Image 1 (cartoon, rainbow, N blue to C red):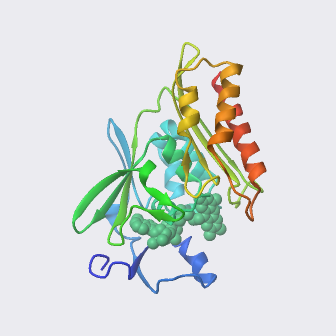
Image 2 (cartoon, protein in one colour):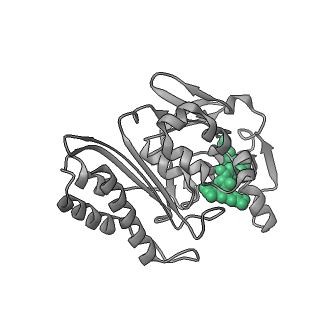
Length: 265
Ligand SMILES: Cc1cc2nc3c(=O)[nH]c(=O)nc-3n(C[C@H](O)[C@H](O)[C@H](O)COP(=O)(O)OP(=O)(O)OC[C@H]3O[C@@H](n4cnc5c(N)ncnc54)[C@H](O)[C@@H]3O)c2cc1C
């Protein structure tokens, strides 16, 4: 159906984003394909190199998977802080990614993990680095005849420190004002590798490549922390909107970086 009438049919997974739009009278489509029962989009598979999660993996399933809990704590934390229990039982990772809200909570973790997105159509499968999946506000590289089928996470986190913080108005059922994910490996007091990502501060989930490059190879000392904080405040340019202000988002982002770095040190 997606292939024969691209753009006419819209996939419907957990419906937790779509139902809100329906209630608000904002749904542009009238034809939906229920993908909830497609077994190919389900299941969490583990190989020596990767963890591969079906697009229909729910937040509850993320939180209860032993390997994800052990190696991908940021994703588990994001799942734990997404909505309430009903949303966690029904909302899917695939829906969160394709819905493409810049304020979504799993994308910063997926960016920091260097996740890969697998897309499927009747012409076959293709893989896209998650970092290049979002092309603009609510825009992605996914075509109308494609489904997101799986999310692949490289199992490279075992020696790394992971840090995830969602900052909202309250502790549950809140949309993020800022969401921070940081992953780093250190060696002899020096940053060996670091990946930093933020949500709610740009039109797309944002990987802070410039700040990372200031820190990569740097000694874990106050001087370098100050340089990194300065670079982050130059690299991001959040906006004022209904949920927060530019200044608040900027200050919180820099504070979260400082907190992460102090924990690394
Ligand atoms: C009360 C409430 C609280 C919430 N709290 C949070 C929160 O704290 N953090 C957060 O990030 N989000 C939150 N959300 C948003 C929502 O729950 C998540 O984005 C969820 O992951 C969406 O998944 P879904 O399966 O329900 O998506 P759906 O609503 O089914 O679909 C969302 C979009 O993705 C498309 N889609 C879904 N799956 C696929 C696929 N496999 N291939 C191609 N296209 C697909 C659909 O066509 C649609 O455009 C909340 C929502 C509600 C109602």
